[in-house]
Image (cartoon, rainbow, N blue to C red; front, side):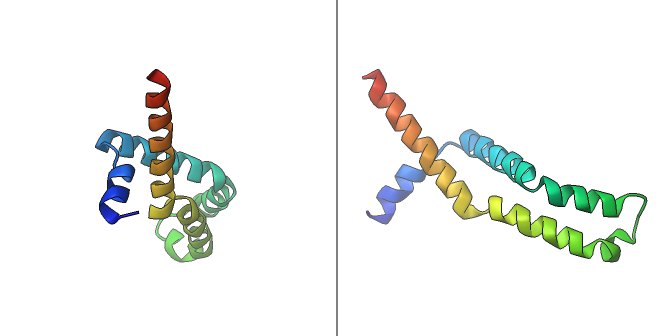
Length: 93
């Protein structure tokens, strides 16, 4: 498949992309809830010391979130969205 054709197939409107990003972030937060809780427990009652005292928890949380919020995940969500849209269009005809 050529680059231009693939780009057209994966192109979605800006509002759709924003909605997909939001959905991706919500899923990431749900999947990483355990790490979010650990970070929140570490951060409770701290101010500046969070930076060095919760470094391990912050890294674990960021690593987890990155698994679910990256360009590859977004591109896959766009492909799924476009397949669903194409299926809806063909069902209407």
